[in-house]
Length: 492
Ligand code: BYC
Ligand code: FE
Ligand code: FE
Image (cartoon, rainbow, N blue to C red; front, side):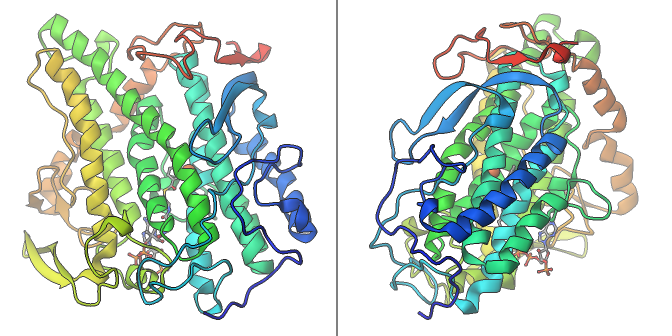
């Protein structure tokens, strides 16, 4: 393996490191102090990040928030909780511990030593993957910027802010890699990550779902359930990367990501719980007049966020994905548990496609369909939460159920793009689809009616009417704990 890129003068640490150095301006466990040039470059990016956070981060003024900060990257006791002013959050660079014997697990370099530097031949592809990953993190913060103004409780407000600061840290994770391993070009890309903005007409975020508006808290919960879950699966494939610093940074990000999934799963669950309660009492479908979100509107929100998140996997068949795999840049979900040759030059699989108004199957080379492989794993994982939400309906004695729409519904990327597939999986013509789509996706009236329910509830321990309280608080604190202290002017 030829190694070309090397930007810093001092060697980066090679041994396992788990303690995080908080005496530094940029907390880190990568021995940043030993590489002055890199340290200075990151320290000059830091104020740009803070500026961005102040301009496009959470808009609700707060005094401090009960936040989790990483203190070590080992298995136990990695996090510490305390009230901190959000702009003083210690964003830093935390990589999972290094395994000095790690080898490449798949593709043409399988069995060779993992890379500690970027091989010249894979430099452009690796940088692109890191930039795409990095672009999503600040995008989500921008999308969620105003939600604090309508939080259903102080507990939920704290969870929103926890997700926001961690997505900010995930940006740091990618910016570190760009600065440390990609030279001047990497530094330029790091600047661009703060210049593109969600929904900006001239310089939007790279992937579609990250330019959609997060209109309200139901949308936020669906986002953390479905879109953060794309993050979980993409990070899961990058965690397998032959480029060890990328693998290690993604491994640690996944640890933080678990809480984001939790916010989504329980947020939707609590919403369904309240709606089900009203339906049970009234013996009829709930309406907005009941002060809760009707089940059919919850289903529409689910349909929307699931389908835009499916687009994040790229085309079912992708030569990019095949090349990333063969080169060792991006593996499969749980690569090491797969029982095959991990090279995939021979395997094949079945894939759906649309022809003559019908969904048909064809056999395609495995290597060409790795985006689909990952997406299938994702869909199976998505179904778990839906089952949990349906349990709320079942426990209320109701026959109604939520479901994942067909994979072809409302797709803009891949083989279904340009076709009109119903949530049940029927291929329609455009006119028929247009006549029905208001039953399947949130209309502007639906969104306005949901928004009208989004009255902030800032009294400790109280919850907006449309959502049930959680079963327990954060880090063993009571539900009514003072998770957030609002700034004086923040209290409406
Ligand atoms: N929107 O070969 P194809 C997260 C482009 S979420 C717009 O099918 P490929 C998070 C594609 O770039 C995880 N364009 O795609 C969650 C290509 O363009 P070029 C984010 C799209 O490359 C919540 C062309 O179409 N991480 O962390 O196999 C909160 C042909 O594409 C889209 C990653 O995505 C789209 N949706 O796969 C916070 C991991 N899809 O080259 C954070 C890194 C495709 O023809 N990214 N295109 O100009 C990747 O692995 C891949 O880039 C993708 C696309 C999976 C996204
Ligand atoms: Fe993230
Ligand atoms: Fe996340």
